[in-house]
Image (cartoon, rainbow, N blue to C red; front, side, top):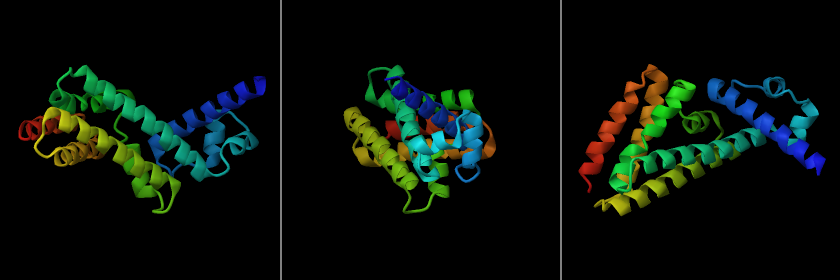
Length: 190
């Protein structure tokens, strides 16, 4: 039982260190030795949990998917019970992320740019985007949108655009602009 606890603790340290490094420096900008140094584990411990860097990157992205999806949903729920307001309120998660981490952009957009088309990292990124879009489409249906899939695509583009522009411009005002555009987009559909 103690071995399992140690394994879980080591894996968590590795993933936490990798997340910070990948988010700040990109996937290609971080080597396994940097993750080892930042996590304080041995090389053999890292490779016991993740046989390759690609496995580590995929695990990081899966973990980020769960975390980011939860943050978007929580921000939407804070906006109230009205699904239309939730579609707009979810942008508060972007502001919260910018305030916490600075303007490093979206880890999924970064991964999509850096990862090979046939990689597990790209597959995780595509699953994340599809999962987010399914949720946005469901919220759009609940809001009574005339074209729920179209509204979901528009909101998704605003989210991605705000994250990319925030990275490029280093200005949190892009989130306010995206949120305002989302409010107009939602109002035109419901």
